[in-house]
Amino acid sequence: MVTLFCAIVGEAESAFPVDIDASLSVGDLKDAIKAKKPNDLKDVDADKLQLFLAKKGDRAEMTLPM
Image 1: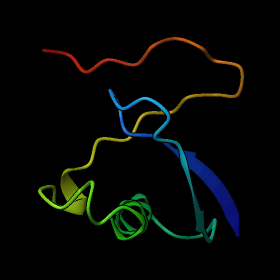
Image 2 (image 1 turned 45 degrees about the vertical axis):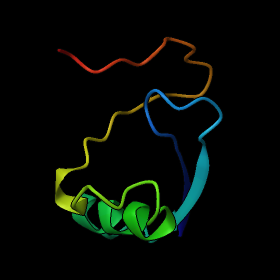
Image 3 (image 1 turned 180 degrees about the horizontal axis):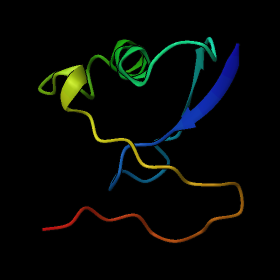
Image 4 (image 1 turned 135 degrees about the vertical axis):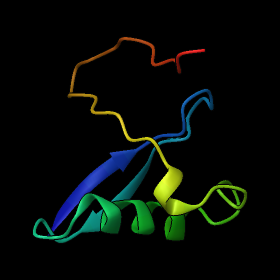
């Protein structure tokens, strides 16, 4: 089991932990994220979530391409 900290791009202080087995797929992770934030992500299907890797200490602001 690993704990990943997730955040919603553009929403300040939106970080939240998601626990998931390390052997599961990215699709399973997307399902877990959606389940953890059903209200914030109510209009987004889990398979449409875009995930970005941010490493500890990385302070670069994340933005979505237009």
